[in-house]
Amino acid sequence: MELTTDLIEKYEIEDFNESKDIPSLFHARLQSNISYAIRSKYKSKFDAYTELSLSVNGKEYVVDVCVFPAQEVDWAADDQIYVDTPPLIAIEILSPKQFLTDLTSKSKIYFSWGVKSCWIVIPSTKIVIVQDSLRNQKVYSSGKITDLANDLEIEFEDVFM
Image (spheres, rainbow, N blue to C red):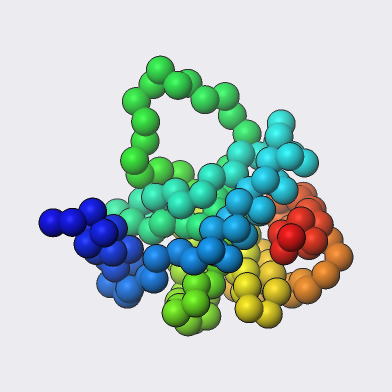
């Protein structure tokens, strides 16, 4: 099988047996920008990981950006393919062919697993939604993006630059 076919199949089986289109240029840029904004401001407090595979109650989910408490990395240890500890923050970026309901459904799963906040980033409208529960959310289109559940704040312009 070709590498391209293998890659497409990996993304198609990601979760809910829904297909996830291969991340776009904007999607990749936003992942980098968000990770960098968090790491550069909170290096001693948080670690940000992109495209991390999480094992949520035995099912695999690949999160666009995960934020965990900062910790030393033991590079000599065995690497983890699936992480079974909930991150503090799960950040999902809407891909061009995804539906918003795909991401809100993931938020429900992440909250029930113990994630403290979920962010949904919508590139086409330059909006970031920060949820600290399913019923409490704030929408950002400028200024500072504030995550009260994790005492984190980054500039909106650092995300969409």
